[in-house]
Image 1: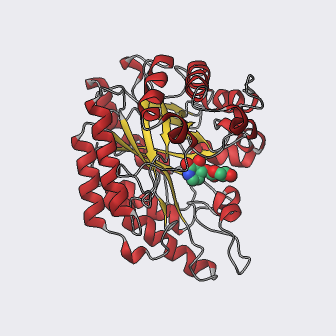
Image 2 (image 1 turned 45 degrees about the horizontal axis):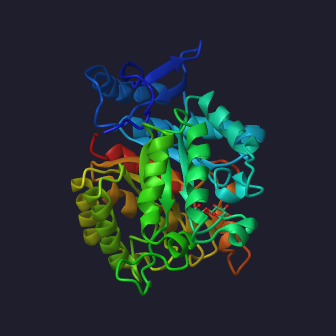
Length: 400
Ligand code: XIL
């Protein structure tokens, strides 16, 4: 199984702790793979010690940052962000302190990269990937084949004859360009729909499915592997936690992965978006037993598991910030308690780090006009109850 830090030699896949002149920690990097060398395993143990040592000078409430809390358990913590990371110094600095992995929220999507059918615009994505690379932050790529975020020109030119060529060429260009710098790709995003009329549960509204049939999924994985020999190739999906839809989605996802593996498709990881409460605001309906069994079944298929887009939609929670923060934190606690108990879960990325830049405010505005508070840090980049819940969940996770 490839390491998430795929292109780096084993000797580099170790924890790196650089010390400032005053002895404080500058950055930490930890390979999370099952293929850790003996040296790396020793360094995992060292990570706990280093994180504890760093705690003394990271005076912020709650102690060491999330990336260290995760690394101490052999996990990677990361977050989504976009070009503002490179222009907003406070956001960038906070991000580097808390997160060891990064996923561009928008800039690697088709609509961002493809101004016209025969051109690419890599200005924003190049800047972001260079930004992360200069800070030893792991990068996840998102997403090569998705039914959303397609440019306007796409519908006019894509048909049953041309769509396959567009898919192959896009993946070759994008995954090829960042080969060695993107450790893991969401190759196919959200292929399933629990309300699909199809037996296989595939999302009927996807132009990829409509134009290419179910084979588009394996085709995208093969193209990604051809473009990048070592990135961890991931199938990413949401809505596994609570009904309506979760039970069917879990079953359809397992079947889909089974078919991909049986046909020799290069897939190494399952991405669990975990936009909690997005499709059902009643967390009381979290089927922890079914979810945990599902994770075990995915792990038994030989996959690494990544929690890829974690956040808590607080639209249905009371307006009062303290009450809301406590409710959000409790959902994080419940979810991560279950998810991190599964050792195949190697990484957790939240969909944003600070409430200042959360998509929930834009996509699910509250009726009372209050801003969403779905992420570990508040809009002023201060740690809040959700941060504490995530940090504690890492502390309690079994060591990888
Ligand atoms: C969202 C972004 O956060 C928004 O900024 C954008 O406007 C729409 O897409 N599942 C996914 C992500 O896989 O790509 C989505 O991101 C959120 C849901």
